Each structure stands twice: as C-alpha cells, then as structure tokens.
Image (cartoon, rainbow, N blue to C red; front, side, top):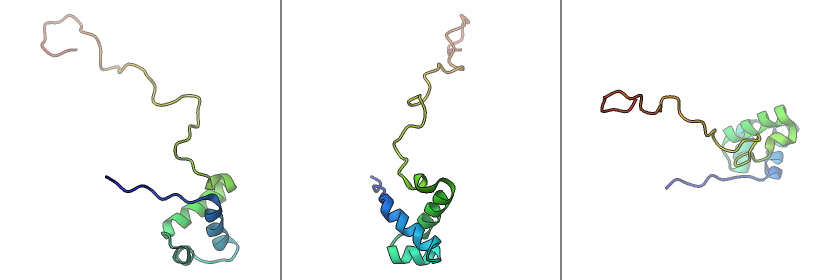
Amino acid sequence: MGEKLKTYDIEFKCEAVAMCLEEGLGYKTVAKVLGIDDRMVRRWVAHYEQEGIEGLKEKRGTLTGSKKGRPKNPKPWRKKSCGCERKMPC
C-alpha cells in the first residue's frame, strides 16, 4: 500500500513563502531549513503569487462546481442491439 501524503498547514506554508519573498532566501535554502523538498517551496510561492493566501489552502477533496463526480451519460459506443445476427453486440 502507498504512503499517505504529508499535508502542511497554512501557517507553515506562509512561513516558507515569507522566507523566500521577504527575506530573499532561495528555494533550496528554505527547503533545507524546513526539512522539505524544494519543489514544494517553489509550488507554494507560485500559488501565492497567482492567488494570494487562497493559493496556499488545501484543495484536495473539495468540489469546485455544482456537479458531483463524473456525468452519468450513457456511453455512445454502447448501443442496444441493432437486430443483426452477429455474436458480438453492436
């Protein structure tokens, strides 16, 4: 079974972003100080620059539209039998 993903609270993410943007530290330096991967720091800074504090909030498991899940439309290639004598369904 796979490992459970580690999640970080918004205060921790804000601290990492502030170290980069306000203190001028590099991604790798911040990552080393906080004990995380530098790609996470890059992602958090990019999200913060695009969306502000909202970009740092956890988005997994939240719905963004009025619909839940995939649409329940019938598959177009699954037609009912056309009446021909083939063994495979049409």
